[in-house]
Image 1: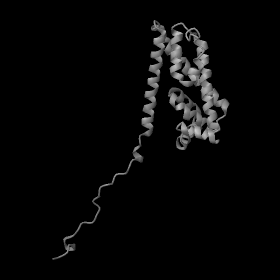
Image 2 (image 1 turned 180 degrees about the vertical axis):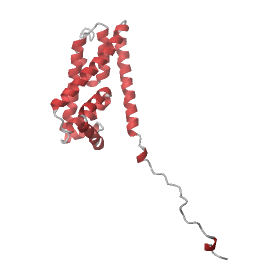
Image 3 (image 1 turned 120 degrees about the horizontal axis):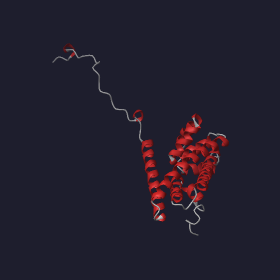
Image 4 (image 1 turned 45 degrees about the horizontal axis):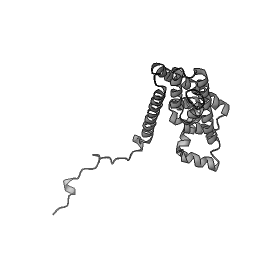
Length: 209
């Protein structure tokens, strides 16, 4: 099967595996005239919602042994889970929108929404809204690139996908570096120099020979 003759066939699974890169790549196909915008946009939103719902369910059933083991393997320690759960409790919309901008935050954010037992209808509404906006922006960006450079579509989509992956990887490394950097209050305390409050030594107090 030729992918460019059936561009919708693998789009859903690709979005589940790597959302932003697959979405920009699909947008380049739209710009090159090989796919239509609205079906691609709908597939992107539904696939995004399906993947985020799986993460939500993992958090909802995190008290079970298998789910807890899987979350530990994904790097979600108890401390990190508690921090994101507190953020979900404070403001679910802010956390969802942040995770949509920085895609690598989706796993801890949406798992925490399940741990906090946020009503699924409310969670799905915010995730679908964020996915719709992000999908339209990324598809538009890909379509702009595809409309300008549509001579070799295979080379174009490969370059777009690699560039999107590298950009996301760079943001992820930067976030992890900042997250692991100790703050000033947690640093090792330095010894303070002696002050001049000590009583002076008098000559009369010195031992006589």
